[in-house]
Length: 351
Length: 167
Image: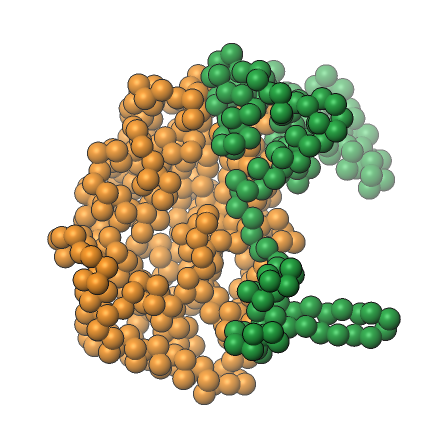
């Protein structure tokens, strides 16, 4: 597998076309693990990093998963391909920018990935389209069992799985959902998200995780507490309480917009579509912002001749690394904006 | 609704004050609220949270005369990590640091983990029977406390018997 092979299509987990994916686009469960007998990354020498990378690569490639996986030596991967992997949420920005021996194991369907030598020795994650936290947890739990048969994790009876940063200590679990909340944002009720998050000890972030803004009304909600609760408790409070509550808020805000100000809603949606269909230069931020409004319009039945699949595809393919790998060359910002506008015009005209 | 101060951006922060029976409402945008000192910080990045906690930890330690974090030139014999370096980078050097610096890390862990300081989730199957018993015991003791608090003495008695067996 080459990263460039991915750049023609959107990730499968990035929102299915059915209605259950309207608000919760995708779910993710991540486990942070470290290997006994090795220092954490800040104190691990380059030789030991290489040794650990090879060891973990062999373990990950030897376990029997439900789909084929391949290994990538991230240090040897060109920057543009690393960026592509980050745009697809397969590796983190930290892994893109890091240095020294590090790797990634990626399943063909992109729903499972493992980062080796990122902040912890091993970070494994499972993605699912829509609200599928329980399913994601079961799958990653099973994979974790298989890995654990082959290698010894750093674990203490008191603190659980030992992690480089104490904020991941214990279960090492990070559950998150990607939310599309345009109606809450438009009606000025985004505090409802922030309050729900605060009450349940959850963190709100932008589309690309820590330190990113909520561009295009996409938010990431994840648990903060990793110690003193079982994985199942963390999963349940998320899947059965916090996430459904936010979905209900967003759905109510959408209904209210439809009932009270359908004309204002249509105006926003159609203007967004108008710009996307006619622009000759468009930045990735603007594209994300406008596609978000078109997505809302389709979900509310205000636009009928464009499919959600097309919009999902555009979200993915208009990102900088995707554009450049498809074009087969490096493009400066102006050239990217031109090509992006062209891709969008073509895709939206076909519909 | 527009922000009352700049009258340009949408108000996203709404304050209700009740003073002497008089109710006043203020609607501000994020920028103006920040200038007025009302900013609601929706999310604190993990490393920022950690540095704040460490700084607070160091302050408390200084106050109680222990000064643990400040004169932390004690280094872990395995990885060489010091608390000073940890307080800058927020990352530890090896699994053993949790034992080496347990006394100093514990308050920090409790505060960043909502008071918790005992793991009760998944356990690796290769863990020794002794360790597994220890974990089971800790879990049972927590359940016992909960049962006693809830005055469920029947459950408490059963839990007590199981604890005695494990001990």
